[in-house]
Length: 175
Image (tube, rainbow, N blue to C red; front, side):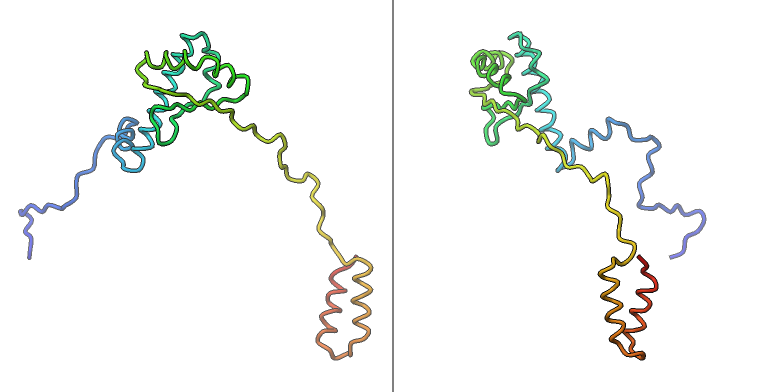
């Protein structure tokens, strides 16, 4: 097939977009993506849940506890809320107001039948740190090793291949 200069020749390539992708375009990509769409949706749901819980705690005059609470739904259930807190005192305070909190959440349009409050495990009080004083690598042979090599050298014949290797070792590894 020959093409003349007048014959239009079209490729199967789509033209390049002249605009650069914006943050909105990436959000659309995340929503449409099979794997990431579910993660993004769950993250958005947790953010909405946190906002509703903050509002309910504010109405109960406990808004100071809001930053210390992590919320989520109990796995397999969408009507049992799970609150993870940093200390036992916060957990006991929340236990005292659970009926009122469930009531406030219901008024906000969040159907919730039960709330489980758990204390987050504390991080370990110790920490593994690298050694500050790294031991120096030995630079030569200690006395016992040197005497042992010299003793072996004395027992070997003058034409032994091992003898020349031991002589090099003793020569290159001074104490």
